Image (cartoon, rainbow, N blue to C red):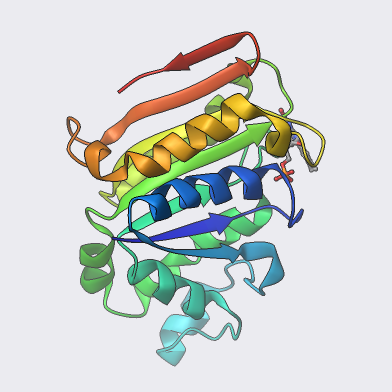
Length: 212
Ligand SMILES: Cc1cc2nc3c(=O)[nH]c(=O)nc-3n(C[C@H](O)[C@H](O)[C@H](O)COP(=O)(O)O)c2cc1C
């Protein structure tokens, strides 16, 4: 399987990157091909006036979106990594997802939907809030998006981290992130593949809940 990790944080060496990187390491240990894209290092503009693009018959935004989108479409599994920013995803992750509309209204919508349908995906979310509920709107937004696109949502890792290297020093979070990557094949077969495997830590050292 080809697994791509999208890192939606401006901190290249930050917590999101550590989680995504560890999941990818787990996947590689099982022979999967891996790739990582740091969205903030690329130019992915917010969506513009779709009507103008439709009239022109092509997307008028000239940036890196198509390159990343094509990488995602060529992958069997996508890890969506984003820090929690004001109860939602980072702007770079949201901009990337919003731009899917560029493929849906201008190009071959059915072809795009067909390519996304059944594509495996995972979520990786660090946040400062020590209550897991702090991320509920972000999780709901992402999970609804996966559902809308009929993607195969395998599971998530949600952990508390604030400073840049916290996840990198959090053995529990790193262990479970690695395990998510190791278990990719197995998770694909769980139930209806709707977030069946979950590792969430209110405080990594005291409270751990896992399943699947
Ligand atoms: C602009 C901004 C908004 C944030 N909003 C929240 C928030 O609403 N809730 C929260 O728990 N943490 C919030 N945080 C903290 C980050 O989610 C946390 O530091 C995370 O570990 C950062 O991940 P990174 O190292 O990959 O950038 C915010 C941080 C920033 C910079």
